[in-house]
Image 1 (cartoon, rainbow, N blue to C red):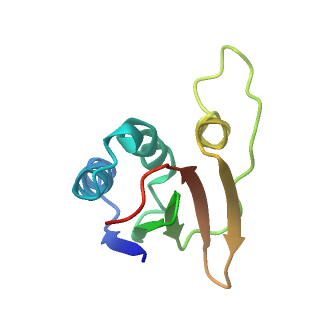
Image 2 (spheres, helix red, strand yellow; image 1 turned 135 degrees about the vertical axis):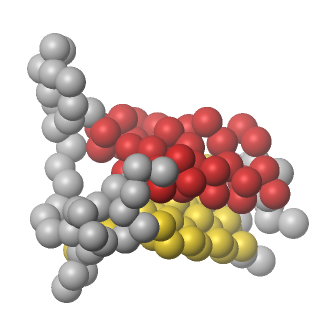
Length: 125
């Protein structure tokens, strides 16, 4: 058995917080409290799109794993970078790749999906 939730968010300053609230409530409903902080941080790093567009967040629970997907319609593919120690940005994808057990990027005709997989010992109920 698998569980799945998805929500779209407009390009607004409040949408990153709303996407964190969405994954938090979903994980708590699925009784996966140990994953909340890591997944909430990851969605914060991945959420956001070019002005005037929206993004979607999907969270899927399967046997022994949770998959987070953040899709937007913006151009280009993100790259894992190693920023200088004094850089103020550029650590997002590096951070999420370290927190997740697996990750990847799917390129679409319009936009892309960044996905992360987190292992869990709990089976879906």
